Image (cartoon, rainbow, N blue to C red):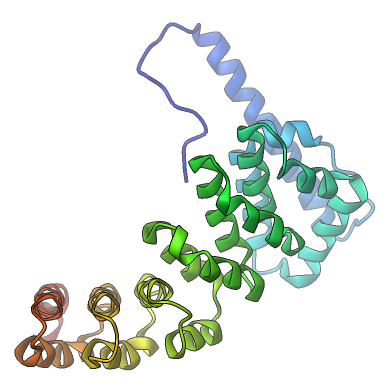
Length: 280
């Protein structure tokens, strides 16, 4: 998570002013936290005591509060629905959607972050449009938001834009957004080479041991593009399952492609180092 502000090391601002601003931020997050707690307790008619301008001015702490509230096991689908209806009734829902197309770059970034935290699935297409935004900050916020939103539509948007997104953003978003069934489908029939690379890397980021056999199969199968096979080796290293060492060793010994062979050798060495002590 990016910090709420940056500093160049200067202490030119009065300490009292800095403390006052920090206190103001904490106060807003506290108000929102209290309001959401009231809603989640069953009081669906409780009003939200924050404005859209306040939310957009402090998207990081407010999004964190929303995420923490919705991620609680006891919240469930009913709790998520209550929060959504409260935002709809207050008008904040539509105001956040409209902010996704605001001319101000900072407001588009903030709106994308908040829509993702609120899991506003109806915003998927709007946020998908931001993947083509001229601002790198907006594009980055859109990718992260789609990962947070999850679901079939968000995955489709991410995969459809795979060729335009950096892998270091696409793979984590896909790992967060996709269900096991969706990952399995993308591994069987990816729409593009880049989508295939992102999918196997997502398996590694999820530490999904159930994907070890298909990842080994991809790494060994010369019908797959080289970069997908190399990415599979990397993913196996991230998962760290000792059962994959034999397959990686065999690939390193017999693979004619020097790039894939080198990737398998590196993966095997790292896996041995990371889990070798556990076998003794």
